[in-house]
Length: 394
Image (cartoon, rainbow, N blue to C red; front, side, top):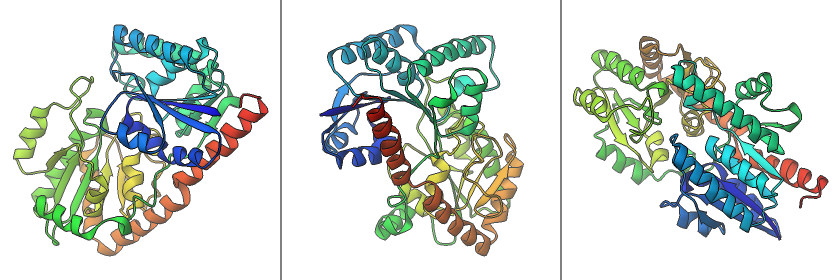
């Protein structure tokens, strides 16, 4: 029996990123899957997939004592358990999971990056720059200890190569993937769409603009709010929806007071965290992501609405522009430019034919380029199985 472990911050990340890989592995014989992550409401769903869960809490924010505790907890698990393949996802699991795995003799380690996050933003203070260099050193250790390093952002990949953090022969570069069957207009219950419109006071005459993101300033929250103000002052019937939960422990977080103050002015509706994102995309006309955050190259906040047949608008940055073909499925606008964002939104919602054409191309592009079944099959069959067997690890 071969054993593969997925180390991730939480159950939501396991399901969101690795569900299809789990399904592929489950169709193989003689494999056991283990997930190491914090306990949350998604753990029962993970267990229903036949995955064993080991609970280790991970704090997403920098805390030396808690990080040391996380490393020790991972070390104890890796010492007591033998894993044939270790996949570490996001920065902390990549750093501490790889160190713990290597120290305990687990040699087939894959580090999976989906964006570099806040610490690699260009605008950092002295403390931030120092922390960045510390993290870069730890990532060099992690990549050195990893058998493969998996990127979905070619710019992150090039950056790591240029800094000597990773060696070229270790690199796996793929698109990000989503479940194109789940994220499909045909999969959405029409009754749920009707109920959702009623809940949000949206009628058939309203055009709906949606943004799904973590509530951090670099995600472009202020630009979204400012663009909404510009648009609504000219077109009062347009509805702007912001979906995301508060992250008040994170530097650069958007305070609740800002959201509530501007929401009262009637420019947008803040929905908080929602599990019915697919249905929200279904009742929306355009999805936007004015982010200048270190995204993974193909943000899910663009891929998911594309799969739902929606046009998208995002920033012209290396981290966001990947899924967009300008004039075919969406527009690119300069970062931190609410006026350009507002103009792009107005151009699309005022042209039904163009919006439909863009939406159709979005769906086609999602199916052809971002189908997670294709991407995860490649990862399992061409990377895990072949490398595993050639190295006599499995």
